[in-house]
Image 1 (tube, rainbow, N blue to C red):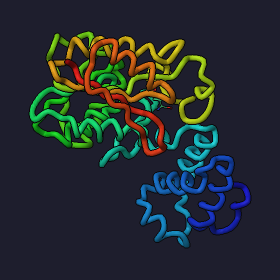
Image 2: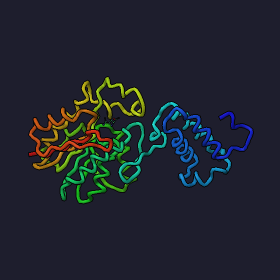
Image 3: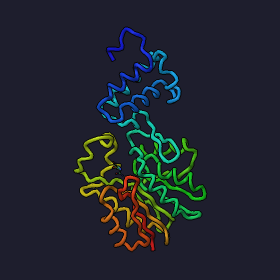
Image 4: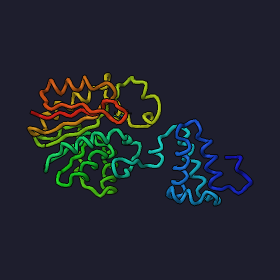
Length: 282
Ligand code: GLN
C-alpha cells in the first residue's frame, strides 16, 4: 500500500487498494470488504457508514497480514474463522472442511425423513455443521456427531456452544464404535475425492485437511466402508443419507442396491448436479 503513504487515508481509499491487491481473485471486492470489517471489528453496516473516515491506524497491521494471507490463496473462511451454514454462523479452522452450501441439501432431505424421536448420527462431522442443523431442527431427537479427529471435535464442540445446541460428540472411525441397530438415521458427508484428482491442486481445497477430502484411489472407498457399517448400525426402516461428488451417484446407488436398501432416491443440488443419495434399511 505504498501509494497511500503521506496522505490521510480514508476507509474508502484503503478498500480500493485492498481490492486492487486481491485483484486476481474473482471475489476480490467482497473479500477486501470482509477482511477490513473483520480487522477493524466492524459489522458490514459500520464499514459502509465509515467510508469517508480516516482508516484506523491500529487496524493496519492486522489488515495487511490478512490481505497477504488471502493473496496467497487461503480461503476467506479460514481467514475470518467463520462460515455461514443453514441458519447459523459456524467457527471453522484448517482442522476442518469448510461447510459448503450444497451440503444443506443433505440437511433438507434429512428433515423430510426424520423420525419423531430417535437417534441421529452424523459420521465424519468436521465442524458439526450437519449434526447441529439436524439437532436445532429436531429437538426431540438425540444427535451423535462422530469424527476421528480430536481437533475437528474441538471445533464441533465450540460450534455446539455458538449454536446453543447439544449434540453428543464422539471420537471414532466412522461407525465402528457403535452397536448394532441403535440409530434411526445416519448422515454423512465423507471424503469423496480421488487421490489424483486435479481439483485438489487448486482453490480452497489446497488449504483444507486432506483427510476430510480424499477417500483413496477411486474416491468411493469411504462409501464402501460406511454403507455396510450403516446397515449394521441402523434400526429397521432407518435411513442412510450421504453426500457425494460429481458422477459418483451410479456407483454409490449400486452399493445401496447390493446391500438391499429400499426407497433409494438420488437428489440433485441447486446446480442440477446429483449430490445426495438416501436409502432405507429393510
Ligand atoms: N464438496 C467438497 C469439494 O468438492 C468435497 C467434500 C468432501 O469430500 N466431502 O470440494
